[in-house]
Length: 89
Image 1 (cartoon, rainbow, N blue to C red):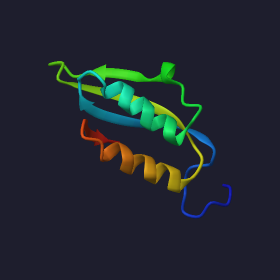
Image 2: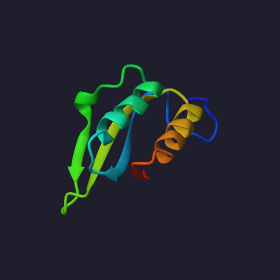
Image 3: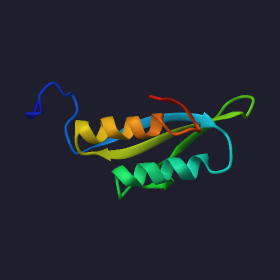
Image 4: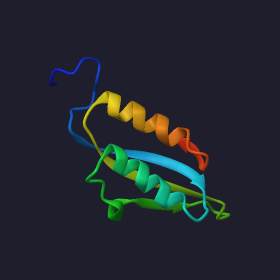
């Protein structure tokens, strides 16, 4: 394993983040905008979408290029604090 202490992730690497939020206009665009802040090369064509059975929520898997633990921590904080986001995994 390469030298980053207490990390099981080698950087850079493709890193999927699951985001669940209200299925409303602007939710996906807002998540893309946040992902691009942390990964300028983020490819929105690779987003996986999973609507809830009732259609009230939308689950997105955003695959970003992770470059550091600090970048991922800040990305999680930014996504989690967005008013449309319910859960980030």
